[in-house]
Figure (cartoon, rainbow, N blue to C red):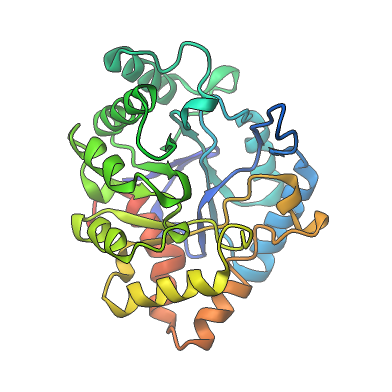
Length: 306
């Protein structure tokens, strides 16, 4: 099954380089108490993606900026064209604070119709069709509105054949998310549970993997939340336990301040310094290929279980 990107359908077999499974190329989550939660410097984003392609072979980026997150699919298409990388865009609902007025509402059925409309007809005036649902959010235990968003997104994914990624705030609420999503007929191997590198709960990690879903270690480099040394340790534990085929990696660049031009870690962090740390700990090339490419393609494609 091909993957839908902003430039058309992409055969997974053609993707030979790394995949970033959770990023934001445009974003606006600014509030009165947080005016800097924005990714708006498209020139810097293009420069970083181009450099990541040149230095690390970056081939595909999954942009999980969904409804209410201030994204711009048309701008993402222009960024992808300029940087020479493939990009998947998304639809769905983030956590409740950032739901658009009246969305997703209290009717799962109507919410499904909204999402299927995006997937069928494209996002806004751009006409660009999403290739994934995400990042579907809850802020700990799901609120009624977040529950509607999770249930509707799962049904829309099951109906359209797309896969789905979540936002589990600080890694919490992950098992509830998985239960709600699978209750709607969405198979676990089409689900990526987000921000699990922010949770120190190894039992939760094991249960997600045992269920057949993916664990997203997707905030690599965000050391104000968690030290990369701790992320590395948890990842090595998962590899030792045999769960290598269930892990996705990314940076989740969600502010201009995270860009290298502003002194941040940038889109290349997980591809460069973090990968180098894995190599120093003896992780071999076959395992690295799973972590950085094959797992993400398998999740997006959805035909093969881990």
